[in-house]
Figure 1 (cartoon, rainbow, N blue to C red):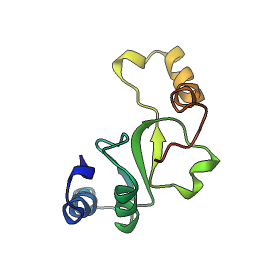
Figure 2: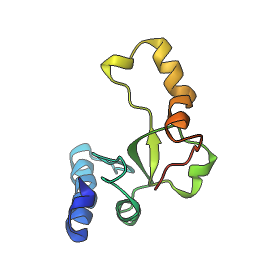
Figure 3: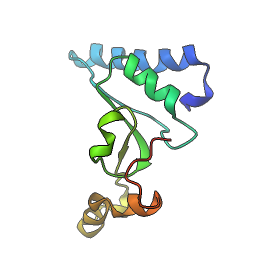
Length: 113
C-alpha cells in the first residue's frame, strides 16, 4: 500500500506508473487508480501526491458514487466496484444508485478521510 511507503518512494510509484503507461500507450495518462485505496492504504498524503504528479483525478476503492461534494476532492474519488458476485443488472442498479455507499458511510456522500 502506498501509505506504508516513505513519501519519496510513494511519489515515485504514483508519478512513474503514469509516465510508463503514457509511453506504452502513446498518449497522456490523466487519471490514477489507487491499488489499495481504502482508508489506511491511501489518505491525504497520497491524494496530494496524485495531484502533484499531474493527474486530473484519482479514484480510491472506497465504496460510493461521485456527487457535488467531491468537487474539492478530485484525487480521492470513490468508485463502484463490480465483481463477479455483483454483475447481474439488479445489483448494478443498486450499486449505481449510491445507496450501498451512503449506508456504509452512515449517510455521508463524502468519504475522503
